[in-house]
Image (cartoon, rainbow, N blue to C red; front, top):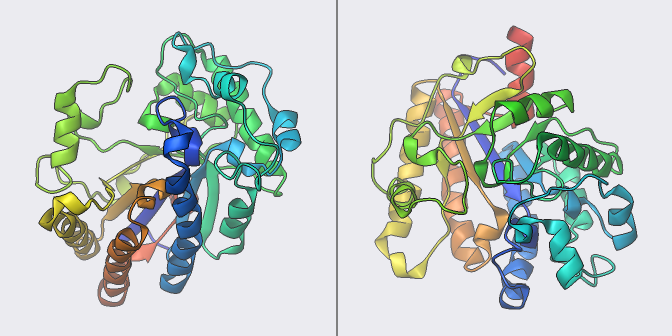
Length: 332
């Protein structure tokens, strides 16, 4: 591992129904999430075959296999959102969850967490404990800190300490970064540098921002999204902020040629990063593969085949977010 080398990073937001409980009626999404659970082992096999290291930023509630285990780790200090429906605890109180993973595979995923840990090169990381929204009105940084501690307590059941984090809905600010660092987090995923990725809140976000984010998946709307690994700076008392490059958007049959266009764009950006010895940081949610899993997996195979070519031709390396932090902090 070196700083002056093309670097491919993948970070995944692993959340199942916790990623949108406030807007996704579970009765409409059961098959979607069951498909997601089936495709995750396929992803892991592909990552192992290609020797690709991946950061699995996982909602802490998913670490559990039983309600008893989950309830043992619930923080006493919980988010006081102005919009109560944003709280996972309010969802549990109102709708309930099952007693274990067999009964409720949408809100527990301990068996899948174990599969991640058993696969070489995979990093178990945090997506907060209860899909915490850092920029929403009403909550406080101390409530966020309690959430981080619950996530770390959940990871301890696997003998792990979480070192990397992805913020739900990409919401964060410096005060929350300090809390992350103080609770053991050394690396977080930063947003791409374009203005349309500056996300304060997802509750009243403009359609113009969303439109530009969507268009940029297919056409060069934003800035160049690769960067030198050495440009990631370490700041005293803060985790490293590792910028994302591209969101891998899901396959949609109505998009026809656009499905191929977005994969081709990722391949071209990755090749550019390899040739210029820069970073290419790809991210998505495993549940993005829930509607058309095999077509989405076909796209992922093309991407990973391109990485293998970049490694063979240009020496591109694959690193998790934690490995990037280790490399940069060691050189600092």
